[in-house]
Image: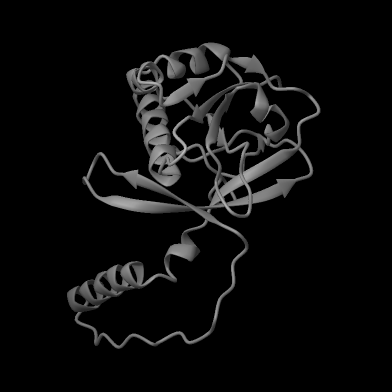
Length: 203
C-alpha cells in the first residue's frame, strides 16, 4: 500500500517536546474524530534513547487527508510565529524501516499519582458492590525498555494526562490500525509506520 507523510519540526531550542508533541497529536485527534478518518498514524523520526526528538510526522494512504491536516489552524499559526517548520506531503520511500510506536499504559501504573487514582477507582467499585477494600501491595520490581512521555489534554473531561510511548521495530508493514492518537496500543491496534529517520535533515 502506498503511503504519504508530512513532517513537523519544532524550531525553538528550548522547546517542551512532550507538550508540543501532545498539542500536535491533539489537533490530529480532533481532526480524525470530526471527519471519521481511520488509518492515520504518527511517527517520531528524531527519536533516540535520550529524547523523543523535535520532529513528528503523520502518515496516511490518502495525501488529501494529510494536506487538510497540515492546513489546521494550529499548525499554520505555529509556522507563522516561527515555532514550526512544516514539510511537504510526500510519498513514503519504499526502503524505510517499519516501526510501531506503542502506547504502554502499564508504565503509567508505576507512578505514584496514577497508582493513587487507580486505588481510588478500585475502592469506589468495592464500596458500590458492598465488598471490603483490601488492596495488596505489589513489591515486584518492573522494568521497561526506553519510553518517552507525551502530555495530552482531554477535550471531554478537561484533564491532563501523559501518554507513555515505546518504539518497537517491526519486520514488515502491517495494516494501519491505530488508536485515535495515531499510536499502536494493543493486539487489535498494532499498525506500523515508517521510521523516516533518514529524512529528518530534509525539513
